[in-house]
Length: 209
Length: 209
DNA sequence: ATAGAAAGCGAGCGGTTGCTATCTATGGTA
DNA sequence: TACCATAGATAGCAACCGCTCGCTTTCTAT
Image 1: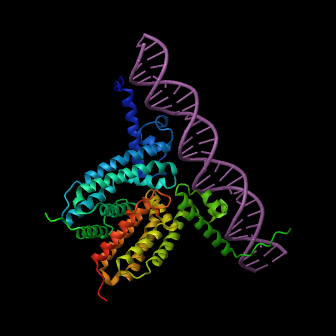
Image 2: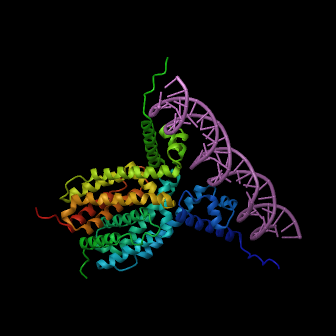
Image 3: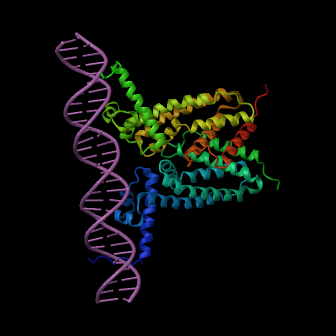
């Protein structure tokens, strides 16, 4: 009948725990319900934490969102890095990479990032906070792509190809109205990705090995 | 000292006038301040109309936004149609068309459409209202592109190319953090557009005339 | 053991939101 | 003219928002 002894945690552990829960909850809320519906109350409910706890660690809602942005930015970099860790020679290889990238772009972390991006358009402070994270993300993405394609094409062209690919995938994700965008809305997306792969490979033929 | 005689307007004219003013005001609010800041009060202030007038013609805020979506959808079709009304033979021609398309995508009407797109992700009713408009828009876009490129490449490939182009431009617009995305954030966007044009032209060489 | 600091809680405050109820003004109709 | 339906204006309501404040609980240092 006795209440089980609560686990003993140091203050830093408690702090880190609730902050982590709040950040994860914010990511979930943003990805599932969108920016407007991500109220402090909703985040606290999802995190299993009171509002007082939230405002102890984040002075304002905006601060929480900025912290969440930086949180998912690092996650996204890791995801991308893990996604393109493959050899690319044939068209099918490129198609496979594009498919994996597409799945990564549709992940909750990237969904959250996108939600924050559009919100930043109407919020100068959030925009200022997102800019460096975005540049760092792009730089790391470029470096990762360089490891894969470096010898195959000049650096400027690599940035251009990357811009085409990621912006297309982002545009696809932004404009997706269906709850599951990978479901069959016609094959034109798959066809477009394969066409893009063919164009890239034929425009930059592999070095003779 | 007498108040100048108010112009005599029929009821239908009054109705149409305020509805038009409300729709235009909603487009402006969405494009400039974003979805969340587009409150009924803000729209009414921008339109120079009372809230009572708004709720007479639109039973709910959502209905206003849905009507606005259909409003800008037709506008966007016209814009696109006017944008691609050019001959395309050389790479420079394609680059020019892509540039015009980019400008069109960054226009307020398309900005509004994008704002509604992301809002629809968290709003089933708005999503249901946007779906047919989106399909119609895509179909008309495809038809227009067919007039330009029809003899040059098979229909399936045309849809794929179109998907690549518009999704890339959309992604570019969505991810733009700067107030003026056309300003010089490096030349990589221009480079990417030119590269894309080269790829398209070389992949689908023009028919011998 | 005890005092102080940090973490967490939840009631509540001012402000804004979408929307309604009530009233007046205006155009159509006999 | 008299009458009515429609259009528009104004005031205000209930709900929700971000955020604050006083309080209790939990860890740390002496």
